[in-house]
Structure formats: structure tokens, C-alpha cells
Length: 128
Image (cartoon, rainbow, N blue to C red):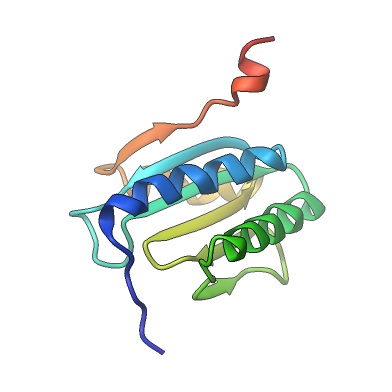
């Protein structure tokens, strides 16, 4: 099975949608990394921090369920056994759910330091 990329203009919108789905499950420190031009693996990484294994599982399941409703099926998923770093590959967008410890240890933003990074703000809590 080969990976099929969707049109680039939809990738940014889908990345934002994935970030919103992460917010639905109270994910923390959500960031969208635009890696177009830096790698051919994907267009965007959407990363977040989870406070527990059940929350990581809930975020992952929510992403998969809601994206399937949009007709977007994950191409690959890994890390679901340990839940300290879960990766869900939607081809143009790769969602990554980190535990606090794994997020600090891997310092993913530093690894992709040349990427354009957009911090996602929870509008519901930002207004309180």
C-alpha cells in the first residue's frame, strides 16, 4: 500500500482540524509544525502533551474516529502499547501525542527547529 498525499491546500486545514480534535480531549501545549520544504515524509506534524495514558488513548481514538467521519483513514499508528509517544500518520499530517516526560526528553520542536511552528490556543480557556 502506497501513501497517497491529499492536495496541499487541504493539509493546513486538516492540521488545524486535528489540533481542534486534540483540544476536545483536553490535550496540552498543542503545536502545528509546518515541515513542507524540510522533508518529503509529511507536510505537517501536530503535536500535543497528554497528562495520562487514558488521556493519550482517548485523544488517539478521538482523532481516528473523527477523521474517519471525514473520509480520512490513518495510514499507520504506533506507540499505542506504551502510550508515552503515540504517532498517528494521516500521510500529509502526522499527529503525535506525548506524555510530559517523553515530550521533554525528545524535544521534538528542537529536532524540527527550522519548521514554522504555530501554537494552538484553547479559545474556551483563553477567555476565562
